[in-house]
Image (cartoon, rainbow, N blue to C red; front, side):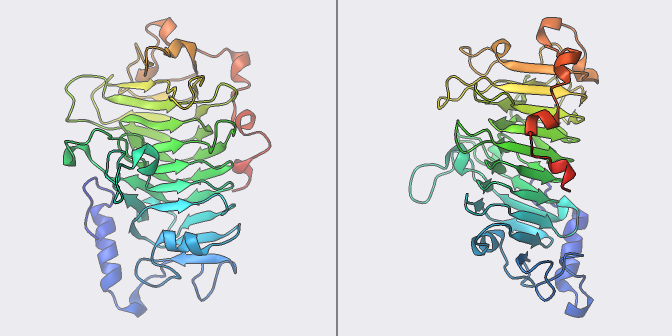
Length: 365
């Protein structure tokens, strides 16, 4: 289990994995921790995934394929699963659990980009680049890393550099203590159709990237999350990229809500924009929405001009961008018209409960 190009596995993780595979069978720790085993299942419907053959399946996709019906649980042992995974709409109420309780130990990763050629011709496109695609409603993941380690430097002739780690489309999708690693378009928080207002909840998660690395049209709440902007060696000037690129449908009253979170950076100060609106060709009437409240913005965010346009025809000032009680160097108001703020009365309605309605995932832990 070698180190990856982007440090998806730390040296200590790799050493531990090597020791695990070389130790006598009787000396190895239980790969599924407190979540039982194929011999003593957590529930009759629980499936166990382990790359070393100690589970029901050696790959995540094989377990998903076998999990017919709804309400199935996958317990995933430590390892790096280099594969693409798709959860179709029929596999509702599915739960994935990383067995150790540390998302660094369970990594699902692949390296397709939008411009990567497909075996049958053509290229993958942004959606097709995703390492994991979840279309089913009621999906929950805990302690999992979703990654796309495609690198621009390795493919200098590729123009489609979007490389998605996770595309989530289902309603009531919840992610607890998960990591989303990539560069451009890391986390695609989407819905299955323009008319579907898919609700998603991300709690205590970590996402990193550079260009539009959290994007899509879902009604998504990010609570107690950390977002990290990456350094770039292929650009000499700012901006290096954009944290958020919502594409909220005009009829949807709720887009992205970021609350009680932190945005940090490994890039020079002020080299990143907080957001830009994405109005896709498939929905030219979209009115992207982003609310950032009670969140610390580090010096990597350009405080003077934190928002910018993706297309001149859709200026950010005409979209639904707002902040409330943001703090930190990236939140300093130098040009008031560039920092739209919620009033106290408006902020009272900008809550996870308002966004998610009758679905209360924080009460279902």
